[in-house]
Length: 438
Image 1: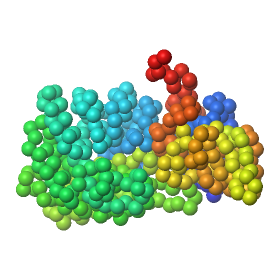
Image 2 (image 1 turned 60 degrees about the vertical axis):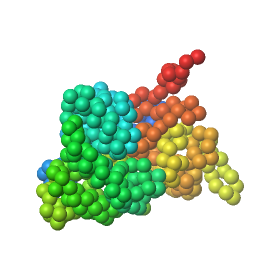
Image 3 (image 1 turned 120 degrees about the horizontal axis):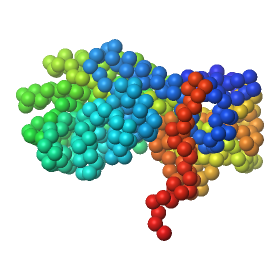
């Protein structure tokens, strides 16, 4: 196994030492495991910071008035929120819990965009009270809630409307959000978006600053963005006579990253070129000023920064069928393969460079037949105790983790320049039952 073959899907700092050990951020993974055990999430801060910078630079050199807002649903914790704030990015949140993390670290409220298809009244009240920059309306119920809250608090709240352009992004049905038959957004083609827009314009408590859409994730093409931008800008132009000025525009996020060696995804530069050029040309065509641009990368910021580390336990050969290698994690810390068939690759982190000689299904310890992390991994002959590293595990793995079968969620540790920092400790039984009453 030549580790260079895997370099495109591992963090920037990943190397193998002469003994075949995986090193991340200047630290042997084996040493991290000795300190924190497995399963373990390792975040390469070098990669994380580079991705933040690449997105800002790619869009800013094409359009000066931009904000890159990190989509926190990919993963959010206090340590990461601090880093995102220090890098000058905004924050895309979808819940009161994510707002709570932002408040905990003093995240600048004016750069927070509050999304979600069913924002609860109390969440909206907390958001307006904290001074969030934008509430992105996803329907008429939220409009009524927010009008009442803003009036009560005697503020004028800036809002955007999430419209649905009915564009298929050619991704998995579970992560497609921009088609007409979606719980997200207010449809343009049915006339509902126009109705809501006029109601918001007439509001004395809300200030409509722009429009937003989000097509889904991960989107491996730029063409869906281009198509949707043209539709939404044309839609916005219809309300110039109503006094609507499009000051802000957001095509959301959903930017893809490669999970396997065979995949390729557009770079931040390629996404930026497609989005900015289409926005400028569409505004010129519709005789509109070019608005501020807000983009919301999440997976593409944190995803490739993370590596999940597991220890091999039971190895089971079903003669003539397949070989199973069970690890001490699984769908409880990475639900994506079971949820929508996400594909990953794996290496043996303590024996890099050894000859690949067998195919294994890397499975978890959870009581489900669908608990499969990697369906078919070509690896050296495995032994109990080997360490399995699965790259591109920074996005959604930790944020969607559960305590199924009463298993504790793994710790998260970041590495950089030979140092490590614990972001989250491993859960204990006391943590898991802290809310129970008995």
